[in-house]
Length: 158
Image (cartoon, rainbow, N blue to C red; front, side, top):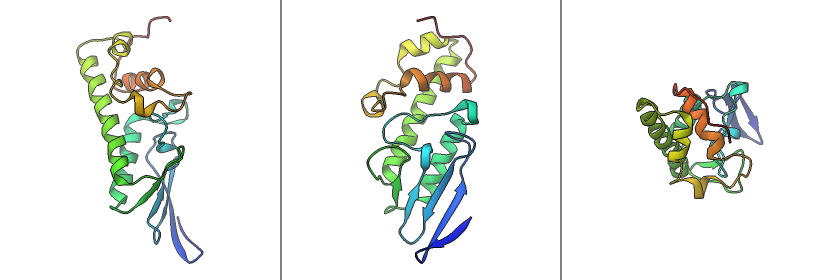
């Protein structure tokens, strides 16, 4: 959908199923500002609400779409976080997700169960930067990655 607000074209469109299956992006064309809603946050790993249609694959596709829409001067507004970022920070966020995904997939292919994957700490290199949200961290994100990639076996009782 496109509309005009204060003389500026604003485009709102559905993103791939990332945080949920109803994520939207809003782009202010003249200002070159892109709001990504809950698909992107500067405070934590991506929150993928699997109970409301969110997926890891959709998160990566949504971030890729946002990167494709962004230019070198695009201002990107996260759904959560206090800072406006640029395209480079979004690429860094996507690359972090891909790295963790790759590590988890390698361990699944080695036959590791979730408790072994968790013990291997595939997010360790990123935890200092992406655990500012006390409600979401590796213990939440890694199992979603694991199961979406086809892993089986449950986390040992804590």
